[in-house]
Image (cartoon, rainbow, N blue to C red; front, side, top):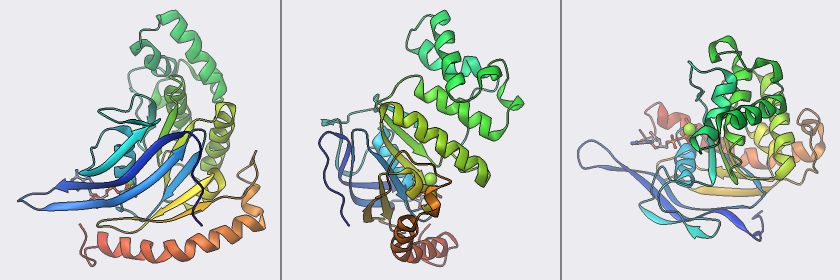
Length: 276
Ligand SMILES: Nc1ncnc2c1ncn2[C@@H]1O[C@H](COP(=O)(O)OP(=O)(O)OP(=O)(O)O)[C@@H](O)[C@H]1O
Ligand SMILES: [Mg+2]
């Protein structure tokens, strides 16, 4: 069940424990002793019940949160401060509403000091890559949720991060659009295979996209309780891959572990299980 260690490690969490201070003197331990590696070029999905600490783990990998104990290494160097090798795609849109799609995508380069003309040219190429060649002059409110996600993806990828951190990026989209976005992500990822840490509630999405699926237990003090390699060949079409017997077998195997945690997670968020 344990996936083998890979050559070059892009993200390595070593016994990372994350705790939050609450009102009064109390401390809430969200994640306990998480040990997780993502190899360079590897696509790892994290699945777990609501409130278990998935976003917390991504924030640790992004350098936005410092673990109370344990270590974080990025490409074999200790992470101090923000992880500048990573691009972060959030669940919520992070586009500036007063900027056009083209300007939103170009912004990432302009911040890095790239001249505006070149930034715009490269932004247009990225809009084309995500299927929005003719949408450059639209503002975010003039696009659908799926189109805004495409712009968000272009905005992150144009900076060419070596690591992609994705927190339920397709969460608000309908099922069909999620699948289309999943295929687009796989197509873009296969060009240069960045290391990806992808958080989702959706076990099917995780198996269809990832090389490995990691499961977290319900909190508090959530732990990583499973790590499966996905034996499905690439390139994958995520519509097709769901029809394969290996997909169903793996889904069944992981779901037997995940199901109990999901029930505990719901009980806790409803206030019947002792969590917050
Ligand atoms: N700043 C904070 N202060 C106190 N507790 C927090 C803070 N941020 C998160 N938590 C708690 O830590 C736990 C993990 O939160 P996190 O956002 O990582 O969960 P998640 O797995 O991403 O959930 P979801 O699937 O609903 O997005 C939750 O119980 C949450 O209430
Ligand atoms: Mg979350």
